[in-house]
Image (tube, rainbow, N blue to C red; front, side, top):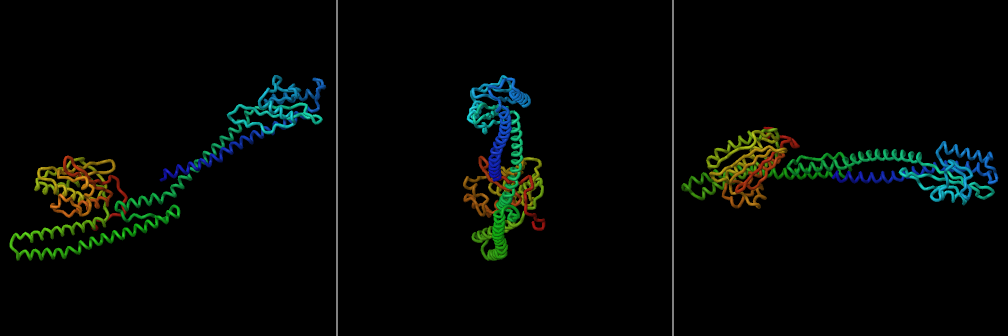
Length: 473
């Protein structure tokens, strides 16, 4: 969300700065040229005052004409500006430099024609820094109400364009600095606005994976998001209370039913003493009673697994797996199944040793149940970049695609395996135990037949809401 909101804010602020910067740059250029034009108009007014008393009948060596010509030459040599006084027929009364003539067309001719009408130049076209243009200003020389000559000044614009360019560079630097400040402000603003959202997302993920004690600190961000954080905490509290009540009910129910069931099984055994040896009904009742006791034990284990938290430790998974494989090898030998372990010689990860051992027991037990004699059950430990995986692959009948979608659900058992002992809770308990420590369990086919169960535990310590000590475990 930040990657979408931040470019939008930066684009809007850049548009605002450009909208302000362009008019400012145009205004600066216009002000510089206006200052140049006003200065040149003052000069034309001074030269027009000197030329006004001079007439055509005045000899060329007249002192006033010489003074005008001298002033024009000094003006041109000092400032590098072409200046002259021209009669209406374009003949020059005095000019500097000597080789300069009025152009037949262009801005100089336009200014000269306006001055013949008695108007001073006041608004020549704007010259931009990238243009090699000149500013032409003309003023009429009026005698007895008639325009008898025109003072024309043709000025270069190098200095003016350099000043405009320097000012534009300062504006650009100011815009860049303002943009950097705006970007910093946008980053802080988006961080301030989205921080509660990120915290809320992290807390939601924690609750989704089973860390029910995760909460959001409603202390930062806009008021609406703080109110959302408080509402989320209230919702999480209610959900945790409901789940806690369900877990307590399952634990209490399974615990309270154990004593009546034990008494019932004892009475069945007493009743069996009065019946003939090998009675099929008594045998069936015994089997169902033992199955019910196993279901109650698994329900109690499931309730305890969901209630307690993982005691994460940096554990070498290989010897822990080898210990569980060694514990199940006698049962595998009894069934004629070959139980092997291979993979890496060492692989450390963050795991609850007791929880991982219990999950391995459930998975290996399940594999041995469905693997026929003479086949293999292979346990492989593989370290990865982010997790260590323990793969238990058997050569049993396997599961269909529809069954793979449901495997691990509570009390679910394939219709093809109803005659195999079990409660349907072993893999569910394994999933809960692994999820409490940030791990996972996955199922897939093992070609050509069989099932591959992959247990994953993280190599980096996942965030936890607490830990339980040995006494609690």
